[in-house]
Amino acid sequence: MPSSPISAAWANNMGKGRILALLLAALGAAPGAAETLGDATKGAAVFDKQCKQCHMIGEGAKTRIGPVLNGIYGRRAGAVDGFNYSKSMARMGADGLDWTIERLDAYIENPKALVSGTRMNYRGLSDPDQRHDLMAFLRDYSDQPQNIPESEPTALRTVPDLAPDILALQGDPEYGEYLSAECTTCHQKDGSADGIPSITNWPEEDFVAAMHAYKVKLRPHPVMQMMAGRLSNEEIAALAAYYAKIEN
Image 1 (cartoon, rainbow, N blue to C red):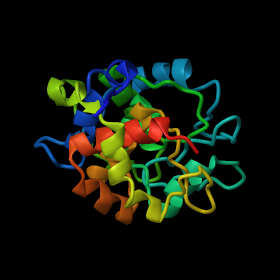
Image 2: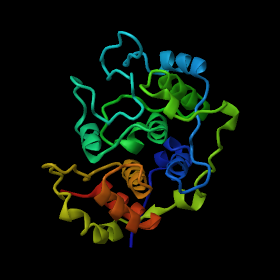
Image 3: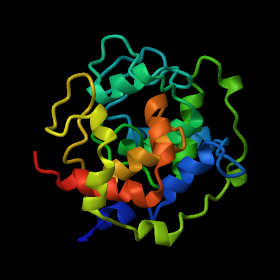
């Protein structure tokens, strides 16, 4: 049967799988889950460079292009009054996604790995030290910062890369079509989205990132967690290849 390689952009954009390794570590699938933050002073500089154009934080902060970031830790996704969130972000909040260290780390590194349809026009921050510095800065404006762990930046765990053979998987769209019968009990093949998001014509890398986030319970929807948990890496690749090229 013909096969379709997972986009090379997947390997490049995800840092050769480091994002998936982070997802696995963050949810306790590997020892030493990411529970540390960096230097808040350095994080203020990262915020000014990476975030300040859209977000405000601190006394007198207001919602601008993006929502205010005061009290971000422990806050439900899509919960700032008056801000017009994307449907995807609002849906994540409805599913129960709260902003934890692990989820913020994944979101800052690659927003679409956690919220596929986010409107945040930000490609992500690949440098782990800068991300942890930024999260330490955000921590200073949390309601209960003492409940959020941190340590010296030197204590940050180095997350191993995902195995190269997983990144090299080729998704077979014909096999993906066979597997999709279970998906179409909820998701419409024609791309309509009446209360349930469309997955038709998703980029392969977005589909794979989303499914692995459900698989390790970083994304909170319990049904999708169960469905993704049944799938092997090969099956996820096959579904990604099928839905990327489906004709409706």
